[in-house]
Amino acid sequence: MATATVPTERRPIGFWLKLVDRLLDEGFDRLLGDQGLPRRHWQALTALQDGPATVGELDARLAPFLGEREPSTRPVLDDLAARGWATWAAGDRAASTPGGAAAHARLLAEVSAQRRRVTEGVSADEYQGTVAVLARMAANLGWADPAATPGAERRPAQPGWPS
Image (cartoon, rainbow, N blue to C red):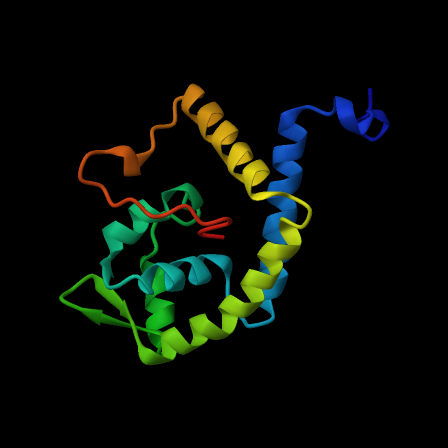
């Protein structure tokens, strides 16, 4: 049966996951692309607002978004430095600059508006429940939360972070 003929309520979770993932990517790519900024740059710039970090620390934090084509945040951080939004200290430790903080603040308003559009009509309980179910499913499929490792940094739950 062709996907187009399957009633909405009978579409499997994989359909919804792929569709929402694609639509999120497209929406954020449009929003950030207007600023000449790839999504990974936004994520790294956001992470640096919490304080300086090594490439390894940022790679671990953004691991779900890295892959074969983009195995490390190093090129992203180099580009942020070229824009004057990040600086290098002590080898591979990057930090946000005042210009980076200002760029982040400007973009945050737009990203926050996009996140509100995405979750419109979804209660906080529904959102948290969905995230919890997806985390359980990921764990069932063999994923281990690196932040659950003793001594690892725990980031407070924020809807959509690090989009």
